[in-house]
Length: 440
Image (cartoon, rainbow, N blue to C red; front, top):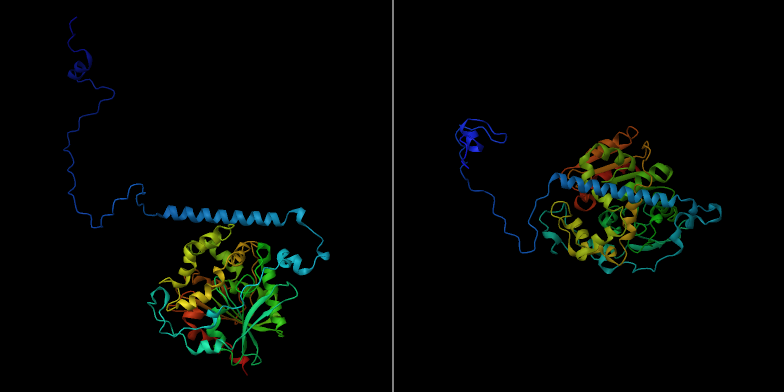
């Protein structure tokens, strides 16, 4: 059999026919390969056998992590609230004692821990080697005489009848004037206020309380024992239990959140307030929904909604995350000595001691959404310009809810979140001027 000329694919191409899958001939010159330039970035080492190659994080990954933590935290809080409101848990409240009604675990008091470790009474000299390098100078170095004065401060326990829990506090300046009550935040204790206890003891009865769940104070494990209602009842019991009808309330961080609420619901017990780095709940909830940057700074709030996992993470590697909160080069406390670091973290490193403080945050969304309130208590508000946890825009948001003339606010240049320790002299100057008419 002979091949027919012009038949098949070759013949079709000879006749100039275009095949269905053929491409038109491109007569343009081929593009020239770009000249190879050396990469100025240093070459990354090849991963070891079995090791995953390095992949830098991107914005999408960070965003999805925050969204996942937010949804998980809200879901966990919603499930807890649904469990609390289940019909099977309802009881006749009139037949239940108040402290047992508000805190079911109050009757099962844990075994007492050591009252105060000796390290809490030792203030190192400025020559001590600081933790984390101490690359930035503090406003004024620790005063060695403070350690001798601290040994004479009263350390006592108050047992309010409303809760039955023992609350530990440190007191100075007894009988020297009005009550000045200090409320700490997380992760701190009374030792955080050591400079203020000494500064104002000459004209005030200064008291720094360890809130429930912290330090030697009782620490029930039930999350229902750390509601805002119970914590405000503790503050009321401390004021009345010390024999006062009102006080100057000084608060920081989560303690500031409690102080804002307390001034709204117990205005007759608060003469003045000094708030450092902490917004009211209703201001924070509106602000964070309008400012995504604040949402990024507050992502830890949603992590703390989960059960047992936050305690596990914070205790890993000998509580390294807790230590880094105070010793970080950019956001920590400069010139913090090892003894001071141990004084603030000693109690939290005990077995099971993290559950109580984290339960504060697990109740944070319990009352949301919070109705806006008008703030009328005369208040001095101090805020850090470089606070890594709260944006300075919150100061303006807070002032919009105040009765005119009742708020004095200052943003301290160069300061971060730990103003009572890093800029305490500047803080004291503002406080003396603010409280001048009470000293008459």
